[in-house]
Amino acid sequence: MLFTSIEFLFLFFPIVLIGYFLLPFKWGLKNLWLLLASLLLYGVRSMNILVLTGSPRKNGNSNTLAESFIKGAEAANHSVVRIDTASKNVLECRVCNTCYSKGKACSFNDDFSDIASEVERAEVIVFATPLYWFHVSAKLKLVIDKFYSFCVAGKDISNKKAILL
Image (tube, rainbow, N blue to C red; front, side):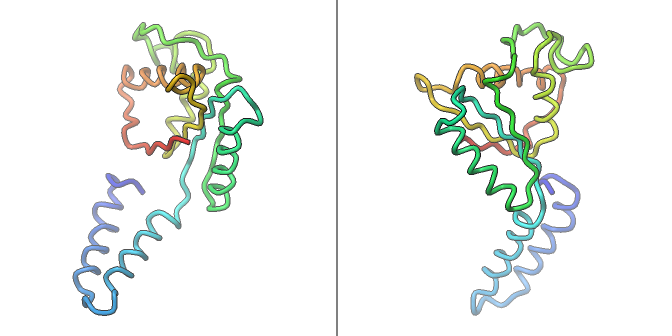
């Protein structure tokens, strides 16, 4: 349930507001009501999570963080897909503006089209990367640069949550 969904705006949010204002202020009932509503909104439903790792080191710190995150997310019944960008063949974005014109995210033949379909499906995108010279790894940067294809095609990905590990 997204904050802009019909269910949230016309069902969940009004019920929470009405319940909040009808409860007496004593004994912390209002706080308990909000806590239960938050647990229902964030804890009960399963989310699609995409983890993009950028480290070329299989047993490095970034991959260890990503694995720990994935274990916790799966334990909470979230659906997780992990993509190691270091092992993918992603070319640089050439700003040709032909994105999605040939039935795939990028007109050039690389692995970004597979990644793009997972990005579209995900509700949360996790970036797990080491920092090299104050920036993400080069392979992950190539993937992030190709997010431009969503803008060219008019695909809205602004409702996705992002986490940086």
